[in-house]
Amino acid sequence: MFDYVLTGPISGVSAGLYLAGLINEIGEYVHKPEVHVHAEYFAAFFAIGFTLYFWRKNIIGIHESSEKALRIMADH
Image (cartoon, rainbow, N blue to C red; front, side, top):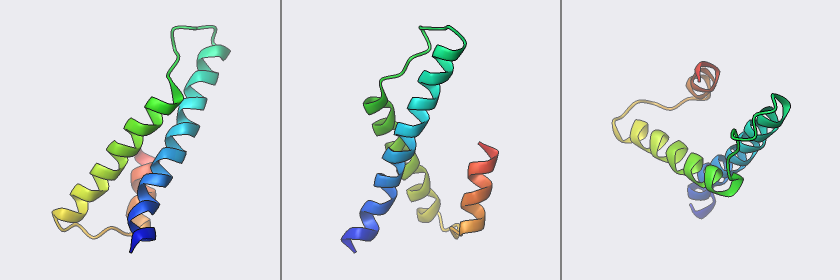
């Protein structure tokens, strides 16, 4: 149970760190130093949002499937 509860938030933090790195690299690439995020804070907020989104979907009773998660990630 403990592993199951932590899998989503850990994945969210990992994804947030990668996304923050991508944002920072793109900012450097286009020579826009004002486009910079603090990776640790960005990852934490991303993970919180990610976890709350799927928690809410589960609470309202929409079945979460791998196909639906793939569509969500492809649309956003």
